[in-house]
Length: 233
Image 1 (spheres, rainbow, N blue to C red):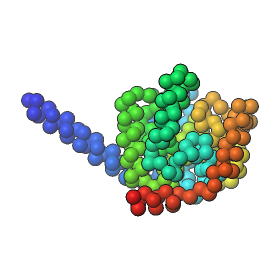
Image 2: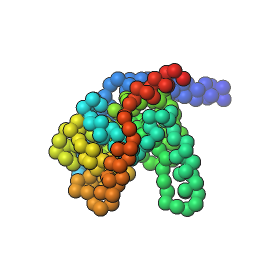
Image 3: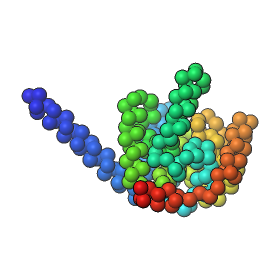
Image 4: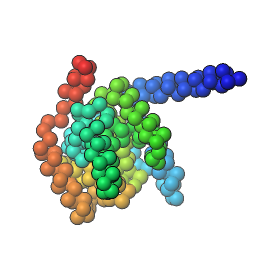
């Protein structure tokens, strides 16, 4: 009886493993039109109004926005393999000292969470997040991770992805965002359902100015360098 039980458990793990890899492989090429986050937020919404979301290729997303989210969320994005261990160490030390809780999630981890998992924190979700982050970093390019990230992330209440956010906040296409507009959108990402990109509060304006300065100092945004290095390694 015990033998059959363990066989059953192993089969479940095998199929879950196979399905998860298949899904990540499929999303390497096809657009992600719906995410668990969108569905969860929709169910939480009393009015049940539909979310705003339009998938567009990364070529139609301003480099300004790509650079702005890197500078605000994960400046080591092009160099790490999904996890920023220096940031994790700093976060642990900061939280241990009783300071304001700070996260250390990379853009890759945020993408894994938004596309494949739920939002509520738990050790199980964190473990699965690490697993999907690893798969994405192995199977996808950095450019693809950024493309999925910028098409799925919440950028306002019921607003998902760069195109919907650009239209909502600035009445223009995502390809036309200026550095200041891109920084404004990136500045609200810590809490997009509370903060406003336009008009910006004093706090958001301060964050926006900081992001613009980081963008000026960052240098050229080049995904190929990282991907070439990954394949050589």
